[in-house]
Image 1 (cartoon, one colour):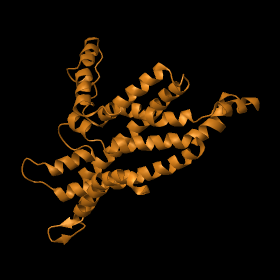
Image 2 (image 1 turned 45 degrees about the vertical axis):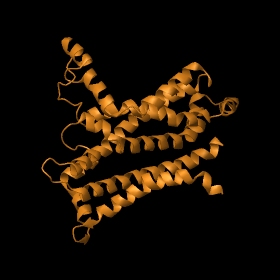
Image 3 (image 1 turned 60 degrees about the vertical axis):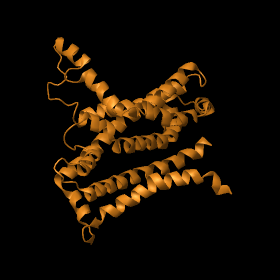
Length: 276
């Protein structure tokens, strides 16, 4: 009877996580004449290695920006009144913006700083050209900027509970022993928050690494990141659909995300010890 409460969750995980993963694994090793490693070996092609490298760089950069600025915003909220209207307003906005992506977000940036965007044309009329070194909005640097838009709110939501777990008595104890602000953050709060901060940054990395809709809406040609390579392998205007290669690419993404999330869960277990 105790398992009945989690049965819907287990069914959901099985249908939408384990079953698709099993399909990707089976397809990655499937060939026209039986099991093969040809699809996995195809991942060593230059353009696929470049896509994986771009995905890692994009995910790491956007995660770093989101972690730093999101942590600062979360700290500002944590120092305020826990039940105040400002905190409720900001956390509600972060909950919405963390899920804001796809065509809408891409169009917002194109309309703002694109080649005919409002801010771009205004700056250009004042002698400032954002694209003097090339149009970077539709490349990896542009994706980093766009991804930061939803990475920062997500960091606020994930990191705020860890900041709330910091006891005021710990700072008072530090001050009673003659320690200052630097000593408090260096020897007390910093070590306690480090696992939560790194874990949240890893979560942001996985979030950016698996994102597809925003990149697909902003980059209309080429597969500069792995999700776009999967899309290109599944859709072809000349009939060269490579389903097994797409599944091998998906398996590669699953391996990377699984490794990142395993580290995240380990760090979360360490954080949970002092949040109790």
